[in-house]
Length: 416
Image (tube, rainbow, N blue to C red):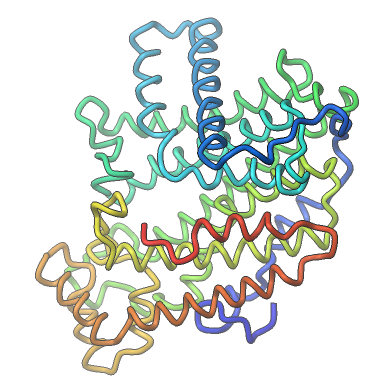
């Protein structure tokens, strides 16, 4: 990406945008040959609502598999089994499901909506693995941030009979990802992906690649959470202005947080999973790099949207109560405010920011308005959408670019 791209401060996402460690790990190799086209079904007449309903049905199947496995393989008593069922239903099948549906959309778009029912089903399974990953991250994140609500309901750890037991629950949700991958993609299992692969060896390779991919992206996201949390260590007294490390609230710090905490798992992972099962595992290096670059730019845009909505969004509309100001987060809003403020404004911001005091929170928001951050955000949004349009236009010939446009349309100009 050139230095003229309109990312963050019209610069790049913290140096090299391409995430070389992930690219090295995901150097494409032939992994799987899918079922011949003669066995396909035409899904072009399927409506958006029908696709979402079909996708949601697969959650019920996965949940029932996991619960039955707990009974049969792990001697989990009925009472605890019911608790896990409630925990899963409370945390997993909610939200907009954009990450999970992106896997299915990518498969369908790249194959002109002509895929086998088994391919369709496995794309849904992979999509739900990403939604399980999202649930794992959110349960943990809400505890660490002392959040109040999530998706229009109390955060799971705030439920009366749960509380900090939620720490064990998010580990269970994470483990469920690998139980699902094993059951549906490991050749020795009953419903393994060899049903759509040419041979056991190739199916084993696909299973191995998926497990490694989910582990790698999980690790990247956890590092992003580390960068976010360490921007304000827990021993800092937020009431002491000289203790808050405002000198680290920079675009460089913010870009690192965004890249690792959001972009890899929210955009690159679903797109790459869809590419993998659509292209016989032969995702060439150029396409891989372009997909990652687009994904990171989308991830940046998505997180900046989140930061803006945390401040100016309606909690009833966005489904959560924003606390970035009270929690002294290194958000885009405060980074831009410190960048634009004069000395007096900066001193006031540092005096008010990070205080769990309604009056001071309102003063921070008023200062944001004084600095025209709403206008700055709208200008950023206009520029990043143009930049993404350019990146997508540069994708190699022969690839249906709607796989990127479809995902971008779900977040562009969003208000929740």
